[in-house]
Length: 544
Image (cartoon, rainbow, N blue to C red):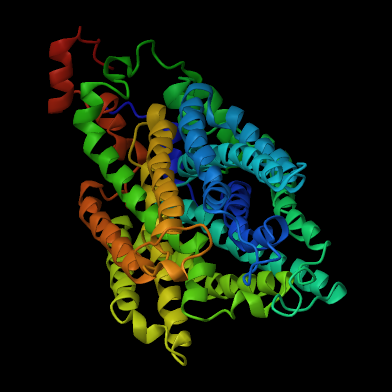
């Protein structure tokens, strides 16, 4: 008879309970903080340029030099990539819970430290800011594999996709909140310290108090993380890790009984897991057996996440440049520093409200109905369609009177990114790999995504520059322009469509069934797999 532990079956069959929602909020607030911290930088880079790189002889406001802008925008992604790999591996070695608190405290401390960046020169301040944002990204990176693994291992089989998607959907609220905070802070300082436009008074257009504005915006990111730290520390280790990796079914049962109302069979829970249970097939990450069983899946999850993040983060981080290019935002010299930040924040908040957040929650409500594959493939397809819809008639969108249509189309690309691959690339790697490698494989997939984000954040910064050298931003060489950049991003989405076919559909299946852990160790003795194993090992006595 099958030897699947009763506690895992009980978790799969458990009804949706209050603790499931508690876990969503606890894990989700980490992603709220992640999105706030990663996307808030795009709201303040124009202000940083005006404050620290002001040139009184220039007809245009100060802006960050290309290398500084690339570092400020992209360094957090470098830290995130490193954190995803390190904490993903550590989560499988030490357990999800033991590592979970570390990532949150790193985020809190580095949020505060980023806002306190100091230096005797502009380069000194930027270097300090980049240092702390790297380590902020390191903490953020750990949250990806840990939160995904924890939520997937707590969830029941029927609503697992919606629960993991709800955790990830908190990113949308983080994105929205950073825009709202930036609007409130910039509006308050603008009201209190009014200043003329840059073209009217170059030096006076940036008041000294503006230096507090960007610091407050960055430090506010520590607040939601601090609010959930206590509850994160109170979460028990997941039953699947305890039973399948730590090999302690009794502890797994007692941990779940504390937080979930599930019917568990105590007599099996009291029995220790037999020595060697599952060890015959304990292949490692770099083994031929892993490559045979899961290599195609890992290739699919990594490539899809890589190309998705090239497009997604290019759009998110450089919304302000795209809005300026189509003249949705006024020219910089017609505004003072705080007014420019206010208008950039308002534009990003509007797109988050209309396109980003609805896309996330469409995924939450529909993922367990239509499945991961359909949502991911459809998302990549429509992202391609709408990017081409922006790029092909690009000159039409840049003419006066057509800006509203551009913003609607641009918002739809965000909608289908979030009701599509931006959500599913996070969800699927937490479902299809074995428990002992789940966090590691999710970390590898997520790190591939952040490599794409680095390509997008550094590459788009240069690529989107005008082909006319007289129209580029100060210090930048000519690029291929926004229109051609959109064509490149559309091509990335086409690649994502193709590699989606390498990823299995997890909908309606247990984690052990998806990862092959049932097939390996828990199948009945008369199945072909069991018979094949018996040829390789000494047969165990038949169960009575």
